[in-house]
Image (cartoon, rainbow, N blue to C red):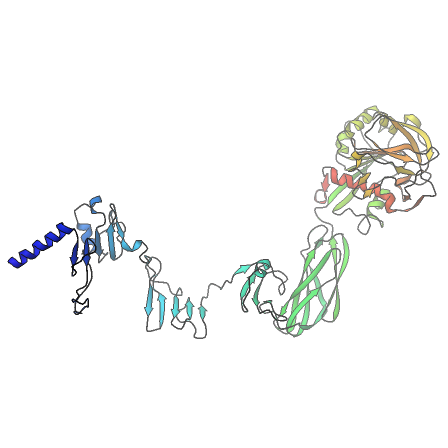
Length: 602
């Protein structure tokens, strides 16, 4: 009894005298220092001892049954929960859902392993010594994994995904009947930028087309030697040998002007040796058809040639395909686009009826000769012309009628109706010019005109321009335009027409005089050289010419010397330099006016 009492007295003195307690050691280093039991030499001689420090062990049910309250004074309290099937997770046991150590943080019991002391997820790896592997045992929520979602790693390094038994010959065995294997996807630029690719590297190139003209293919890097590099999978070992059956070549789909080609050509070939192929048609009307890839089987195969480009003109065109020792031809029609801009032309000329289909100088210029139209030097792509002769104009309907047309042609020669023009209609016409909703081509009279009382002369007078019948015979040509006219028909889409003539030598013109400074002038090289006989008004979109002779079938090429004469001006049908002024005028209407219509609303 005395011995035990002395022992307790010594412990008491150690605790309160030194504030450090040592168990199994005489020199504690901390408040409580527990050591294994050793002999005087520091060796463990009793291997039957059980070592460790145990916190109170309770079930969650027992923790739930506690009636004591934990607070700040219990911060750091440590327990070990041996079972979580009972009790509940009410506060402060909110996190108490698995077996293990928990500490109290002043408000809740926290898992000791929730710090960086271990993995708290439920998808534990399981050692399977029988099958020499480790495997993912459960889902993230701790439930059993579904069939086909296996993830195993064998001791020999083989990995199985979707299978618990990876094939012995495979390092990676991915198994599924509902999903595929997705390699890294990248563009050709990104693929090429891979630093030091190793032979056998596989990627999916999203825009490569060496074997698939539609774009996108699986490629493998084969090395840096001759003929090596990035190769499409299944690309064959060389160039294929085949013959083409031209009788099967056919165009599928339709082509239309101004719309990127979407049709294709199909044809049969007889393959006798596997390998790659690259077939290209001729480039016709801006469109080419191409097929490339690799044959994976011999015998009769159907090839599809896909298009590139956009048709430029309507009509019938033929594409030539040289392949397989044969030259095949495919002919197809290119249609006018359903979204073509319609240039609507109104003729008030009577004797020069623009509305005559296939007739008249306007139709000849824009549709049916070697300078304009589908085969011409000057083309109005995506534009279609429609013309109408209109003989009855009143002051009431003039503005509404004119505003429906892109170009209005008014000629004093052979006027359609002598009652059309009077003071009211002339005033209405002048007022309409200020709206700039149409390009107006206004033509004066030749020697057969009616004098200063002519309708055109009266209208010009109301525009502060005086027309005098001088009967000047000679070439008409454009004077040097002012800077403000550089985007006008004088210097427009098809070039600068300054100094260029457009009328035959006997063109008869009226002289015009005006104080206006906003006009570009058309001059004459006749018996009174360099007089003004026409003009372009950017403020009214009005082109006036004193005679019509230059609007017919003959156009003029003049040298740049002045005055114009038979020694430096010649004429021939539809000469480009002479007709360019008219091309500029039509292009000006196309580019500067609000569209009046399209093919679809005609």
